[in-house]
Length: 632
Image (cartoon, rainbow, N blue to C red; front, side):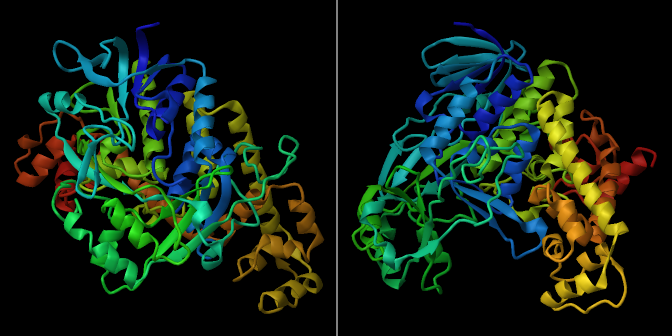
């Protein structure tokens, strides 16, 4: 047993797993400590990855060299690209996953990662230097001390976690698992601010007891995509390594009704949420069913998604029915939902309340301001969702490694990645309710599409030593290929006889003379694939290309003007980011700054004018004063 490491990661949820893998793959010697080796990367809530904006994050994690995309692809039981009817900035991949396979694959990949060691135990306290300014290791529940140059805390919902089911309160970080005690109290004593949040989960039911004839079926996409940019990661795409294609598992949809709502209301007097036993705020955009029927009392029904938990299990996740009402009320109400008349419950839904630390106490690297080399990632920072946690873990692991190696930190800007948007929002604005990513949070979402995450990020990560050379070669080839498609379309003309047949199919005006393919493509409803069916030279051009490659060329041409405008706006932001501020500057010395501005700047300690401009409470006049003070 070794007791000295470069980096210790506390917690093996989605954030902890990505943190450990990233730091180890960059060369650090890592110890991953978890309370239960059998629940590594457990999907504590719904068995799915991705979705609106979240799918973009998973692709960004993959482009940087993380594992979440690969594991999600290999354990997928269904794939869907959401928002295909909207513009490409809104397209978001999502997989339904086999819960047990997902966790098993994560553990397998971590065990095959050199430099990762494991230890099963609870961490009860941090080892801090005598001057109180630097973390030096951890002490476990069994009294074992492990030393390290950096520590990443990814405690999820386990810090003083309390499970609520009706009037029952159980100490725990997850159903059947005990909570973690000691770390919050130590950090608060050291000067950290903490708070309480809550999240919830719905009942799990026996799929054999449902009447599927009363449910609406929701099939996966016929044309399969995937998360990872690496080849051969999907069970649904045929290749030499994957000769047998698995059939996707369908999900289903049903609805509550007024009778269900009436039964649920009978349990409100025992509801921990309505009776004040839960102090923490829950996720605004994923409310419990009792919250929904209260806030939206005018609605007679709410949609429920019936999601299978895996290939070889009958367990069903009832998405949209999150609740902490008494289990008998849950069961009685559920049996009044169409298709659930004979439903058998495996376990009831519950709410869980836990400690978090407002993320304004962090640097943009996710290192704490109070204690050097101590990093926070995941729900400890007030976020909700596997994807939000995983990307924080990845960035914390990368930056912990870079700090240990005395190298420059890795910070993604808002115009570079959704990950950059998320961390920037957390550090500069903070959050008092579980933070969830949406496309609307990103000003540059047309630049931050799911199809180009590798183009945006892989070269940056490869330079730092995380993304592999194979990944870089793949993205370089892809760029060359789609640039060739763009050149062809801008320089080659279509024959009227051929292309007019296509234009008729899309209700577009015919042409009387040769016209560049680019001009044909930019017409409404036109596509490269559609043109190729009527133009042999285009068909030959794309015959050996992946659909994603020529689809990306199509996006670049169709949205060229909009993309250029966003690039210009991003460059303006970059100029502000390049104006660096001394993090230790005394803002109280600038007499013309308002009191609120001084307090906010002193608390957040922005590293640039750009970061200062995004702090809640800082107005344009304050930024002008700072620029004048800098001689600009």
